[in-house]
Length: 321
Image (cartoon, rainbow, N blue to C red; front, side):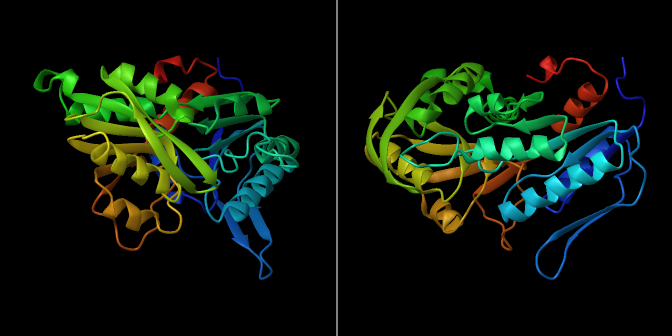
């Protein structure tokens, strides 16, 4: 059953236009015409150049850096579609910013992830489509439907092709969680690639600073795959990789993460680390002028395109997992 007729419209902001173009190519439709720009004082301005009345509208926008600009663009795009009588508005947010502020870590802290959820709903979004939230419970911050895609499906496919099962001994490979908080997602990934699991135990004295304490599990002489949901300054990941080699005696270290935020010295740290290859999904575009020889980006636009097809057709997205 098609809930909103045959008219599906896809628009994008300025965060990741190539990603949106690939989605449209997979869907076999043209990108909706819209002008998303900023006035001289920085205010976001959106002009839809075609009708969306009664249409099933999908707005594609990662809230990556500059986070506030991209978030505001998305909110204004939602408002423009709502006031133009769109039938349904789905905010497609491959990377959901502010997701790390999901609880009160200390007194008088905000819960910014909940605030952003409220803002998206108040603007007029009818549903959300995103991938690998930093904390799965953020889904409960929304009072509208949210479809949560998993990046591990793409990574499983990549590593099973890179290390074919018939050509390696499972005992010599191990998936490593870079911290205790990522154990759940690392365990699910390890189960799918049929590898063991280890954990790097650390404490974080302040934001973006981590100190490795010890390694839980046997990594000596093994090939390790560090698995996380995002890499910001890369301090935690690189410290974990260093610990695996120097403290744990790992043979070699690979790493993968869904979202490559890559702020500040991230690229330099990755280049200088023991990590042989760093794999991201393209939920955030690579913005470095000189590509890193270690970093690789896998395209998940086709996954989002299939999810959009299922949402538009009111069918289950379970086969995407």
